[in-house]
Length: 435
Image (cartoon, rainbow, N blue to C red):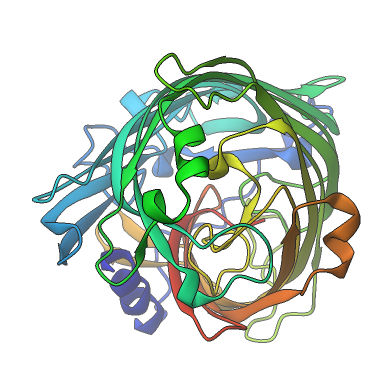
């Protein structure tokens, strides 16, 4: 909610041009030596402030306070911190941290770190960052009291809502590289995660108890320890990974758990695999609220339309909470996370992304809003128990509007408000685009 209020404030602020907002022209002498110059981000020295987290607040570090006061989870709160210049290493590292706790015992601690492998430092002017190549680690320990499960398949209703408590501990490593050289159109990624999950009764007062309603599924998904292995390969021509304006991506990803441990569970699973085929595209369109700006800048205002299509197929034996699902912040955004779940799922979406505040202005001292706008979106999708039935299942949809603002091209925040075909309303606040 705090982030949503900040969105409203900055989008309602009169757009006064910041006198220190130079054109941020990209350095032609450095870019001409690169094979794919359009896929490198230029950050001038005035966007590289020194100092700790507080000194760089809303320039390269972003803090989101969180407050809870609900009967189901109790009173509490926490904080989310996104630091795009972690440890002050001139944008060579990125970190994201979440810490929350409530009086009823809902808690989360997560930390993810990323090091950019394509990084060129010109101390007198700034840095060039390639956003396709990176290595990272992640850690999470969480206990969620209000996880939802509506059953499997596309015909479930809101009256089928049940809740369960899920306790998760995980440690992961990932690597992403571009081919045939830095910035190239082929991208592969590899990842390994050690994870344990425990399932117990939920605490949503007006919902059914998942443990009571689905005893076999919850027994199979409880006390589940596994080594999850991820791999992907895609052809990606987009001009940026975080905030693209032109290009497409098409690829395949695999996520499986070849090693499973359920020592105390008689209904143990053998493990399985989720295969996902995905594609997306984005195109610039004629601007509605501005003239387009200087195209020689690092980040000129560009309105765009974007779309995606994804098909996920599972095989083997997987816990119910890991099966392909729709709803939340990236698909069918009018429904809560996990609203639709099945062995197989498809989803599609489209967005129109116009900028309303095209030029940056100073908010306070070095804190500067670069750009503000909105997005109109439509999401489609369905799930099924078998692949041949997927096309016959009811197609669900969501539509809505989102607020978007950036502090720079590598720091976009959004708040999407969607309505689903069964009358749900859902708000999702996230860092980065949904697709």
